[in-house]
Amino acid sequence: MRIYGSKGLVIDVAQRDLCIGCGMCVNICPYFKTYKGKSAMLFPCTLEQGRCNAHCPKTEVDLDALSRFFWNETYDGALLGRFKRIVAARAGDKVSGGFQGGGTVSALIAYALKRKMIEGAVLTGAEGIEPVARLVTDPEEVAARAGSKFIAAPTPAALKRFVETGGLSTLKGVKQLVSDFSEYFGMPSSVDKSAFKVGENLANTAGAVIYRNDVIELIQYKPTTEKVFSRPILIIPPQIKKFYVFDLSENNSIVKYMLSKGLQVFTVSWKNATPKQRHWNLTTYINALEEAIAVIANIAGSKDVNAMAACSGGAHICESVGLCCRQ
Image (tube, rainbow, N blue to C red; front, side, top):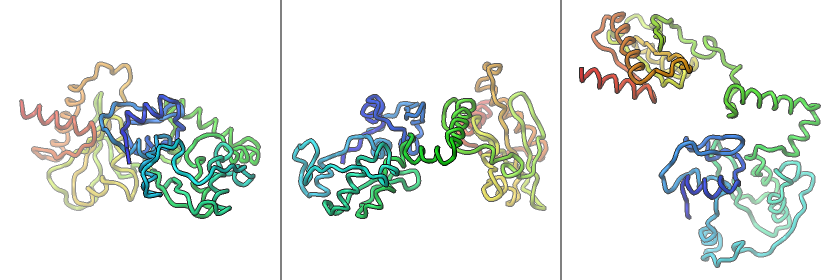
């Protein structure tokens, strides 16, 4: 089966305004993000094939591959592919209430299954973040794999909810939309930030700020063992993440794990740069790290320091090591 890459996805779907904002490409490819209800490609990708294209519900279907799979014959070039007959079906109340846009396709499939006109239909449904195709033989199963499961648009179910709540569901949605525009530049939020509070159910490992400069704050965590290793370790997160990405919760904290193994743990918390700090450059960040390392070595009484970093934090510590070697 032909599978193209992200370039084909942009040409065949985005530029033809066929994107329905289902988010499949966004979930499986870091190059795609949702913008104004559509998927947009942030950075160029040179891969000739990709899952983003294969999983998009709007990309071209390889009719020859389907014909070989189901009929064991090559595709004869017919516009609709191989079929037994063309039928029409009306979406009843049950169908139209559970499917997107009146449920035309789903209604046809449910109708055909119920009338025994077909034995089954291959439909796509969401399992986790990826679409998975399944052979559906029961008309009742069709609803579970309807397009409304992927499309963020008003549905009869949403309208029903509007009536049931007296409009509160829409008010809540508008409130969330305003929040997304004010805090996330229009990008839809993926979590409710109000459910997390630093120091309570997030980043609750005991520690304190022991040093700060214009670029960083240096945090030392309280040891949890009687003895500790003499050489400390410095955790360096990326500038775009918070320090507690390594200390999320009681059962999801690499900081807590390191402390349990007798390590002296320190971490950097980067200050958020504003337009006033537009003069900051690579040297600025490296100098800040060197200051932190000097403070840690002095506190621990160690000649050197271990380091663990992520993303851009890793790039900066590598550059810092290279600079030290040169000097």
